[in-house]
Image 1 (cartoon, helix red, strand yellow):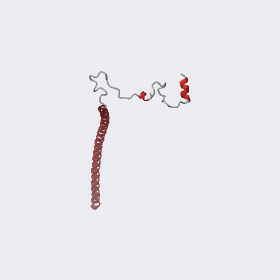
Image 2 (image 1 turned 60 degrees about the vertical axis):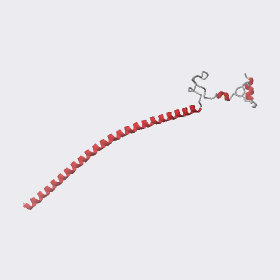
Image 3 (image 1 turned 90 degrees about the vertical axis):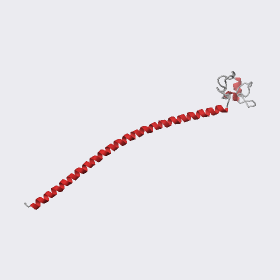
Length: 141
């Protein structure tokens, strides 16, 4: 055996050990990177859940504000209508015994159809041609 052959083997062995050590260090860096990514993922997931809760809360708040706005608009329209028709309602009834607890701001829908009070039927129009059905109805009483 020659020393030249042993030296080459020792040199090869040393190179292999260096490569093994390099691979171990690379493996450790890879493990650390995986652990770091897991932690970042967990933090991002937690932050995402918190943001989702916040978004839901904000959506509920927006709906509440929209409802409040709609109610305020209704109150404003009612106040404008009351201002346009003074004397109706509760505001000016103090001391007025004839108008207790508000007037009727609605028109009588039935009075529109009553053309002739003494004409027999409240739906009959004067000078309107009679149909055979109307004649039968008047005799059927």
